[in-house]
Amino acid sequence: SYVLTQPPSVSVAPGQTARITCGENNMGSKSVHWYQQKPGQAPVLVVYDDSDRPSGIPERFSGSNSGSTATLTISRVEAGDEADYYCQVWDSSTDHYVFGTGTKVTVL
Amino acid sequence: QITLKESGPTLVKPTQSLTLTCTFSGFSLNTTGVGVDWIRQPPGRALEWLALIYWDDDKRYSPSLKSRLTITKDTSKNQVVLTMTNMDPVDTATYYCAHHGGGYDYFDYWGQGTLVTVSS
Image 1 (cartoon, each protein chain N blue to C red):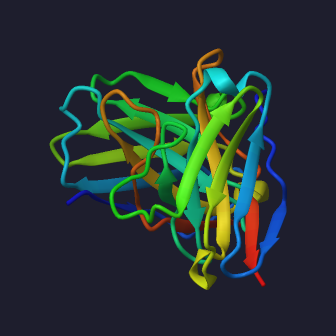
Image 2 (cartoon, rainbow over the protein chains, first blue to last red):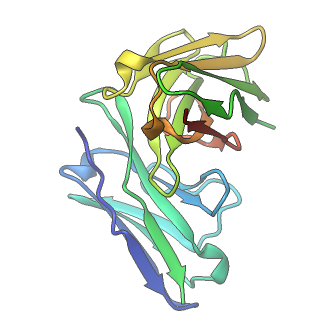
């Protein structure tokens, strides 16, 4: 079964940059999407198709995907960015969606 | 605007079946390319995709749960129903329904989720 591995946690000081990786073989051939989930809330799409942002998502959120790893970057981190983040892809070989293992971002 | 809302029992006994309904507005499941998915999240754990139904009634299921899941739609009521058989305490989770539009494979609108506990 397809596994998208993310680091369990990332800690970052306010104003600094947080980077969250999502790794599996051959990630560069897939479109990767990212979600932010705050406690007790439904996930919110923050980046789609590797690097596009939905309307209303700050430019501080950006994504990239090359080779074996996709990355969500949060620039100028704010206290309100503290949340769990999940990557997601469509696995065409088995015809189903897969979420990453999730990363908890803590703002120090 | 697009909204989705899940409804169903909050408590289910082991071995029973679970039936959840997703009632949506702001889009039609008659529109080409549109789909509605079910996704769950056990307490403190990661998201897990369960099932998808498309506008044309095409369906997809999680390989690990396929034998236990059935997804159907009622376009006249703007509803999608998920049935999961033989429930177990490990199925305790918040269950979400979500929308994705034509031609893309991400979920741009989510329901608020409904917590289902499996316990005797």
